[in-house]
Amino acid sequence: MTARGDGRTEGNATSSPRARTWSDEAEALVRPRAVWRRLGEQPPAPSGWTMARRPLLLLLVLAGFVSFTSAGRLTAVHFVGTFVFWSFVPLTQILAIAAVRALWAPRWRLSQAVDVLMVGQGPWLVLLLAVSAVCLFAPDVYAAFVWLVTTRVLPVALVAVVMWSLWLTWAACRHGFQLSAGRATAAAGLYYAVYGGVIVGYYLATGQLQAVLTVPR
Image 1: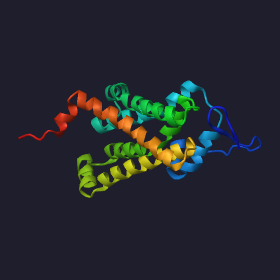
Image 2: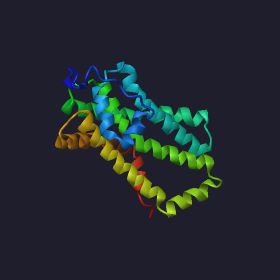
Image 3: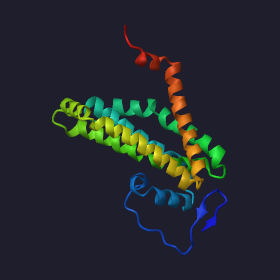
């Protein structure tokens, strides 16, 4: 295996790629190390599409989630509105990834760094799709969600998704960027500090977070 000039490694020229039937996001849920090693070794894709494909996937799933949970079906108003107004989520992720890249992976192209780290969004995609499925197929949606909350299925699933995502982000830094365990921990911490800090800062600046946290007297 030889090092590439863009900070990635190159596999044996005689090895043939294995056919894949899963998406990167799905495969990363069960074989994260193999996925990020492969992403680190594959030739770079066109930068524009590489930069956009995973943020677009997140927005598509998020827009569908909002439409299904709000209207029980796919509607243009909910879908397009969410796609536009929630675009700050992947944009903030890209900002956080740019900070990580600047400190720990400067030889990587930003498009490749975005591609590598956002493979780890699989747990959130699964949760959004699962909740959307409840809204679409449950005979009584309200009763279904009451059961999911009272039996703690939904809260436990949410905690599991958060923890799973934290670990996948660390694995992306460790095996994709090929950092040491300590540097991968620091890189993942910076990613979430920037990502979470920007979002919390926005809601604080607009007064929305205070309104949610204020207890009426």
